Image (cartoon, rainbow, N blue to C red; front, side, top):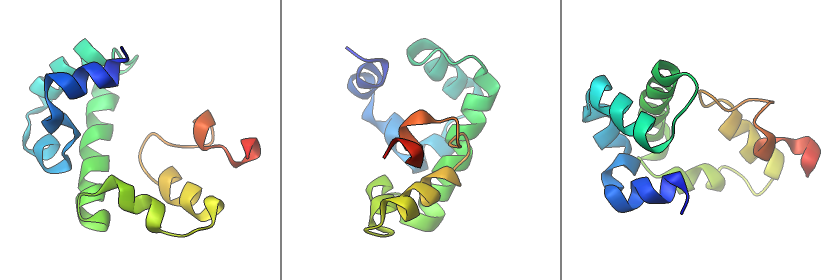
Length: 98
């Protein structure tokens, strides 16, 4: 089972932008460390908070709406890349692979 699936089964609320913003950094740090084990835990917490705020502000808390930006894959990629932590090194979002 993948780490994200384990976290989903533990508590689906950790995938809710509103809940992420209401959760203290220390609790998020514990959860992220336990389930995802990132290299830079403080940056991971900051990313979750910043990206959660962006999802609330720009996509009404619905991540799937990012894919409604356009039918053009490059425009969708651009919408994703402006999120904190998603850049040219994030291989799955690299247009060179398409």
